[in-house]
Amino acid sequence: MDSYHSCGHLVLAIPDIYADESEYAPRSGFFCSHCMQSVQARFDTCIYVNLQQVAPGMAAFVLEVSDSGPEFADFLAALGFACRQASLSELEPGGDVGLNPVWRKEFWFDVNIQPTHVVALMERIREEAYLLADYLPNGIAAVHFADFPKAIADIAS
Ligand SMILES: [Zn+2]
View: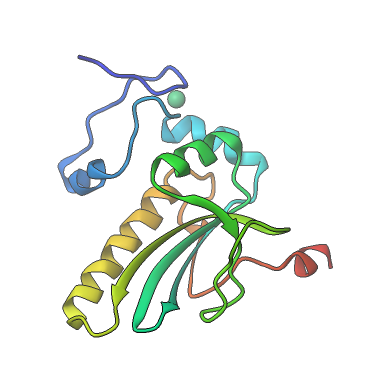
């Protein structure tokens, strides 16, 4: 049975090389990447990928997405992102939503696990960041590794 994006376009089969993405990327009921790029054109959305200490002995790869349009925000929520305050640094994760909201997703791991698991997790995070970038007009230029959302004070100046 055919399924459709909320913009009305038919959901197309994902090429085999991207098969992994279909596990965690809902498509039916959300804008297709082409229409999402159009509605996102008036937003300066950025995707930040970081490693943070989140608890004693625990670290997390963290994705934070700034300045999302409403349709992209719906998509992020379906992917498990939550609305949070933007982080300031590796050691200062954002808490409850304040003046600088972002959509945030964390992938926790024990700092004592095998490095190969960390590398696999890192690959998974990179895939997700690039998947999201497909929906943004500037593509992978929107992805920033080891950088943080700009503070309100920086944007204002
Ligand atoms: Zn569409």
